Length: 529
Image (cartoon, rainbow, N blue to C red; front, side, top):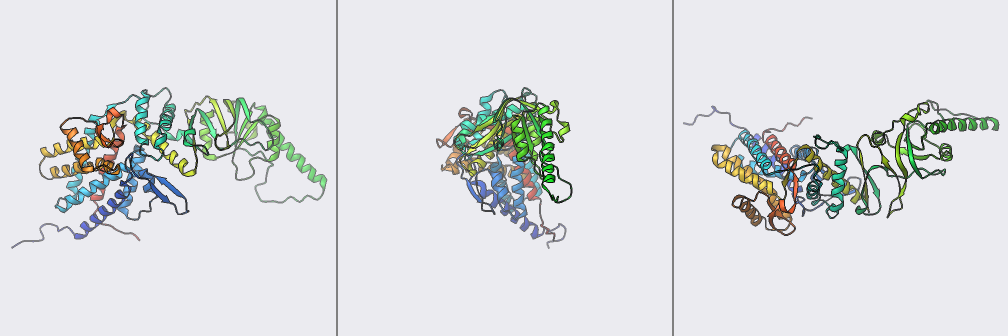
């Protein structure tokens, strides 16, 4: 007689919820799988407002997708956390998570408990990251060529890959410019200190790194005034150069011409007084912050400033004020009485520059002291789609350099680290017993999805290539052997300079494993109304 009731029978609902979660998450992973690697496809997305977006950056694609299933949303958040942590490998992390969940469904069908799978996977992730750290090579931040080759690998899978010869040095120099002389001591870098200025017209080849500051519009010259100022003294004003208004809405009724004349005369006197205070401080370039309460400037004030030989740039956005102050070393002035010489910034030259290919004018500040270590990248592109994608690609490239600042090690690309880690895990699984051995083996096989997908996207025979890769790593001990998509064969990635930061690979495996363990431990879905 079989006794029942001694062990808690697991409800079938738990299995159903788990299966539905795994299926939903795998569907998301399969959606971005084709865009992995240098031969990956791009996705065309249409926004609700009719705008069109082309990208193959995993985080961008997933963030724009309208995902409803809660478990699938976790994969979207996973790609975003990889974007924050490493900046690159956002597609990789989702594809790995999808493969791990696929392995989980096989293990669950064998009757292994979810908690046992999750704990084994965490152990496996530690072994995999240790294997990757072991095969990595240290990098010196002063070795610019090594950094550029890492950035080239990142850009190779982007839409703008044919311009990587120009964009890679820009990305490297912009991040190294932030670090200044204290490169060796730095442990992180804030990419918000790099300002991306998009300017339509020309081609991506016209993109440049500006050591100074650029505004994406020309100076305001409706009243004449200079367009080039050498040895500039720059004031950033937050007060309005126009007639004062009362706090409440009011109407002034003027009955005779004499009173009208007096109002205009007083207004003129008031504005002239403000302009004289600006001139007295020694400023010859004035940046005027946008105002919503009343006009930040009017024709009269521009006329006076032009007569005084002051170059005017209007409509400075509120969020840009801090960046401008740090770059130029000036202090924003909120009242005309506060205009003093010590609040001014300085630059060797300020002037309008006509952009080739479009006729647009931009104001360029060169020869600034730059006490706050900031950089500006002037992006050019023939249309909005190209500009936006170039902006995202350069940001990813800068994140790669930031990853190298955080963890100074480079690792081979082209699926090499995944195959190496997979082999190490299979060896570890042989020495273990019981469920751990099963789970390790499943984890090892799941990691091979990266080289498999890379080969598949490049139009090669994936099974042949992955077998060849295993042979190179196991029998011949070539740790850098990866997929050379350009020639359709297996080569040593270290010789080809196909390198990526160690942080990108280790962070992808750790984050994917954590998400997988999280999804496994869910056994019920509660909808709160």
